[in-house]
Length: 144
Image 1 (tube, rainbow, N blue to C red):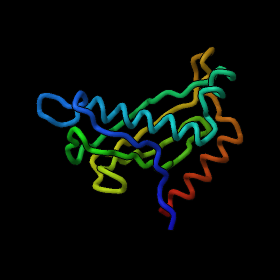
Image 2 (spheres, one colour):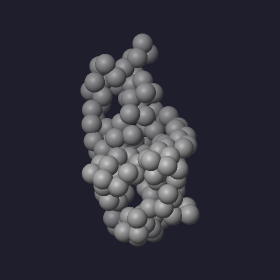
Image 3 (cartoon, rainbow, N blue to C red):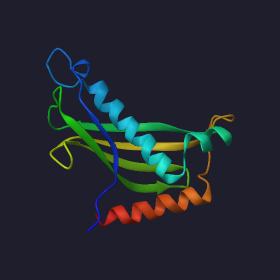
Image 4 (cartoon, helix red, strand yellow):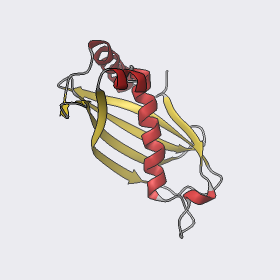
């Protein structure tokens, strides 16, 4: 059986840790944001596409659950599940941050993002080829 795609790999550095000695919440969010941009690129929403077409992506809701600590020196990865595409303008997906490669799930973020016209500052439809990729990924991820 296939697995969810890995959208980020990195490490926890000492400067990511707070006075409690574990990675601060801002770094969980930052690493998952990097995973988001890797997901978008895989879907065809690359920085070049967005810039050349006056488009952008915006997070409208993120709910994060922290399940375990990460410490300096830990290696982390993020795997991402596309859950749903709504009205051809909204994507819902879940990031799972793992300690090591495929290890313990240390955090989960449920994300809702919208596709935007950066000139009009309003939501707009995903391009058809991106919509097709998103729906195919959501269908594939539903069985994983």
